Length: 451
Image 1: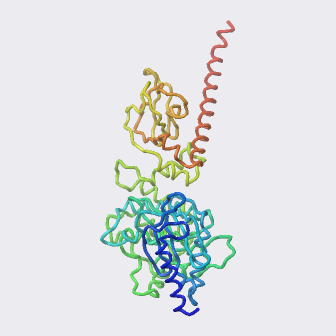
Image 2: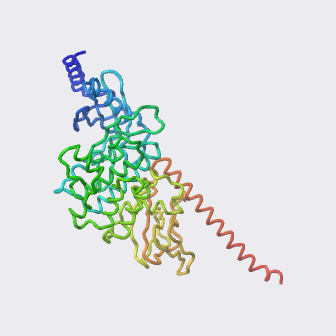
Image 3: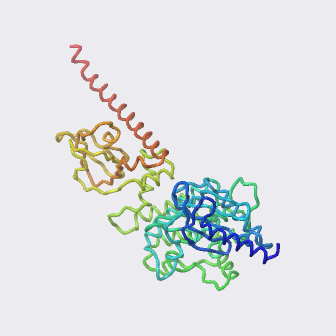
């Protein structure tokens, strides 16, 4: 088929779609954007009313004599991930149709811009926001690595922003998938964000994504790429041979801790670069712990790191921990402030993220609860109207994780199961401790009874 015939066929298909205002079972709402190989539409799933994004592929690109094979390989790679990557910071691929005259992919719809908007000098995000976005990218890409997926094209255009710091990584078409019996496509990625080993077409590991995310940090911090090059050839030379100035050279308020993180993420030698995503994210947590300005708000980075460290949440997966973070309310309570009152109603329960509380009855100390302990859960577990039967008072400054059971009921089955398991472990531990106390009391009474 010649190019004119192909063009006519594509226009016919496009016209049919516009006329019917549907792609498969999806009703088109409006066009969101278009590129060299596809057009993206906002659409509605007529079965469940869910809004989705549909990427409709241009048949001309897929049938192009020179590039069609590469485009189809990239599209099939992304389509193969449908249902495979389920993480709150990765755009979900819901369905894919790669056959016939209408080829499309159905994705989770994200109502927000890409980070490209915030990678310009006159529209930069706060330093702390960039650090938190980077942390969430680290955890998402770590999850992808555990699923055997390396993205290979991390850049601002492939990271969507929701709210102030919530992100979704998209466009896994360039991904390298371990244990997949296909040939990788060389030369994929965006030159400015490519790692040295990617440019040299060496075997790639997750460290190539670490390097690219370091470049993204640099661009979001400064509005500039680390290498000022006039062409791709010059860019490649700089990536392989030149050390960039630190981000603080362009934005003085950036602390040395973040300069060091960017520098290590962008090390040309993989032996000097971060070896794992956990190392990368650990340093970001360190920045928030020691260098971030003091403020009442608790960063999501700190929240997630705290959840991961608490015994109550030890069996939760990372995906489930992100869910806990989003369904919980975190607040700071000052020393001596009463958190719960004897006799009051309510069904909220709490986990101590930091500090110690006193549990008292009519002024008498019953117990001390420490970091990682849970309290107030009996109101949630009880099947009747429950009244608190003790006071809970902050012994020092504490941080509380507050859970509303009504919100918890709408969580995923996995998350709810983990809470039930954690409650069971906690109750068994408390019963064991109570038995020990009773046995000690009985042992103390034995001599009296013998007399």
